[in-house]
Image 1 (spheres, rainbow, N blue to C red):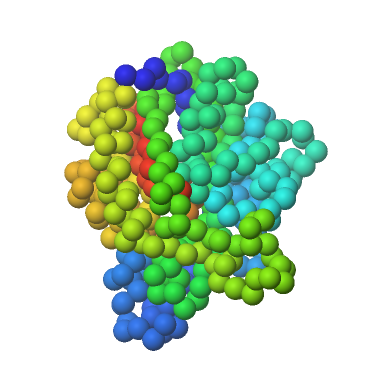
Image 2: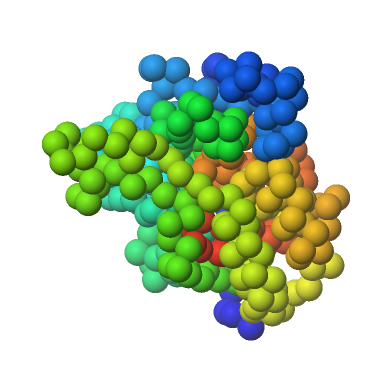
Length: 334
């Protein structure tokens, strides 16, 4: 068993873009029969960020809600961590832009990014828990804000109807001696043999914007081999779940709430079936929000807490996959 890390979720929040787009819009655009996009992806509606809803602005709105729920002011934070998969701009880090959007631009609060694509929030949980245990931080804001709609091929029937924009935030702190909140176990594995299954090829130093040697505009769009991703994840997740529950000293029957990454409708169904997850205790928000990339897990966690599906003292299993290909999970006592 792992030694529990005394970690407490002090508050959560999210931001939903004002614009909502139904999957029937994609049916019309792609020349498909009505209902085809929803049937293929499991997504009925999603938020699409407006021109004035930048990733950092949305992150700050989600952070405001999380700070209010935690009952603390932003100036009391010891660090701001952004876990987005695709940043608003390459430099500076997105956490710095979030700090400024929160009105804390002169605060000196450390701000930095963690990028593990869809698993960024899980990685932040582990690293923040370790930093809090070491006495380096007391209260840390973790945000994930994504605008995937700007990086999709409009004519791709696989990805265009699947993703949605949005932001989520969590304030983390140390659990008091009288509180039993804890990070009970954490696991992550990466298998780079699947690195090409989910990718954006351009935008970095290999295929740089404006490079006259490259005129492939699709290099800057998201590409996904869904079947390959699900096959690889399906092989890796069962063993990881066994290890994760063993490290926590629990069984699935002991888990009160399951929060999976909202990858796709079919992906969620296959994970639930393959891992024999309790459907009644599994959180699904994909249908109303789409796949929000790194914001998916913290948004689903916020929903579980806000809806009363996860209450103090109960255990929560977070589980997902990310580009890389990575699989990961965490067990929390909320």
